[in-house]
Length: 415
Image 1: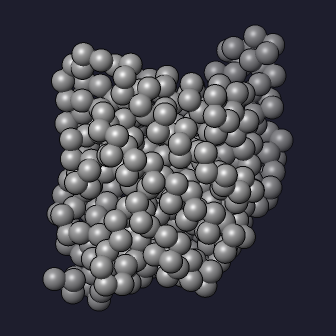
Image 2: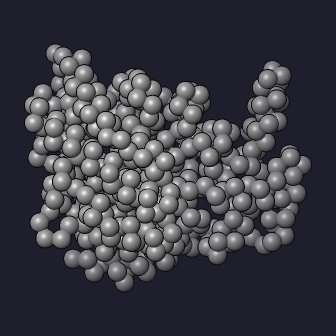
Image 3: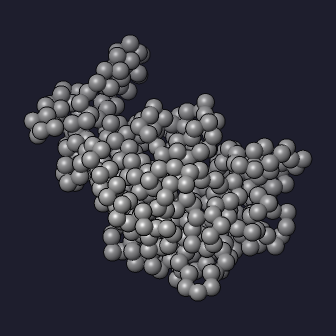
């Protein structure tokens, strides 16, 4: 598209009261936390056993990262193809160990010093997650809710150490670190006691949060789960449990788009979260019949979520991606998902929300419906192209040629 095409789109949106320049500049400032685990199928650097404990990655596309250096290189390459300045989200199993691998309860900031050095050089912030899966003490599906006090004590220590690491990230990088607690604890079949595991979970979390972390450097979030593989009948950290505990503790409950029944509209939950938590932590994913973590597409679910984010102020949201598709090129999965999130946000930024709200409040539902539908034909693509052009990046699929060259030159040699 030419500059004239953008100017024509700009004029068309202006008639609706929309400033495309403001939309572009707002989108530039929205940082999305890109999840490291897409690059190696949630493998981490502790063992070669792969993900387990309710976590499953499907596909065996060649070229996945096998070492910290390879994963960092893949992240570097992906970030170069994504407009804007973003963040990177790490799991605790991605600590970098010299010699003997430190167990989860012994993790320290030093195991993540190479990540901090990498992030400083690139000017990106880091977010963090304790890893309550893929470990011998999580093999039976229970960690912080285990009836074994020794198992609980191990995972409590892990949680505390992770808070210390998050503080380290925040202090070293000068930007608060969001640390998300997600435990897939649960049972495969119907339990006889639903209350006990939740009481033990709450007690364990209380012990973790007794650690007096620096609230200016660390933003704790707590994520619910619907079910998992091998944990189909009961999940300790249900939506209701997580919301109740987070409110009581004064931390953020986190919404994950893949952790609800497919008939639920996750976007509809956002406004309630904002009202009662003041900020919304949000994992963007795409479930297909289950929490399958497919690469996100610009579908109605994503559009609805993006519109809610924009209507309520992007500054009130912690946005992170969370999927792991091993059936396609992993770098392409990162780039596509990040760009799709940006596309959905830009489309939302080009919505005349004040006008639509006034129509709703005035019960002018016919006019509201007509405008909502006609907006779908407005020249969004011209504004997206201008946004990408200013970042010196292609607005279309041309970026995939770079990924394929990287696959030929780098990833294909990982045998």
